[in-house]
Amino acid sequence: MTESLKNLINELFNLFMNNELHSVVNDQKKTSILDKVEDSLEWHESEFTKNISEHLNLGGHRLNRLILESMGYLAWGGASARIGRMSEKLGDQMPMCEIIGPVGLIKDKDLRMGLVLQLPNVIYGPRWHEAKETFFIFSGEGEFWKEGEQSFKKNAGEYVNHTSFQKHRSVTYSKSVFSAWVWSGSIGYETYGLSE
Image (tube, rainbow, N blue to C red):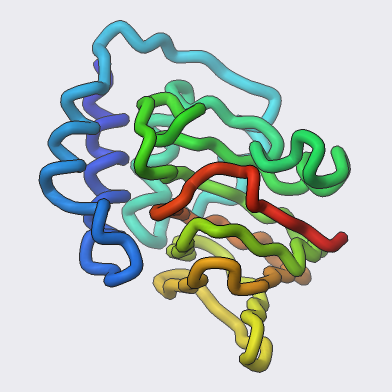
């Protein structure tokens, strides 16, 4: 029953496995995480599910289809970093789920991995945190900025990396940007900062 979720997790690991920022994303960790997926997980819908499904590009990257097939297992909500760290409005414009991590569907203390949808016409940042972070964009497009660099546009199929404490911002215009993300290193929210 949870085969679709296992396929999604496998694909997420494959996306981030060869990124030098995230040595913890490896075959051993993937096996450990997949072993934690329980067949007793229940399928449920959330207020974000319909909106999220509308932003999937089923003709695009295979991650879109895997998310649709796993949607009811995923605990979607407003951005998890929002509690005391960002406005409710901004958090609601960025539905996300932490699939793996301290508060994720699959518990892990060394890694956070999940999905985030940044709706159109949203400015998120500048922000910073101790964790090393990578986004893989699988649908849509956005404009990104990292401290020390000019802004740049990214589309589906591209990665964005952030080193520890590097200030960064993402901006959407007429299109949303749907991304898989990973945090490694010091993954606590205690060092997360945001300028709105």
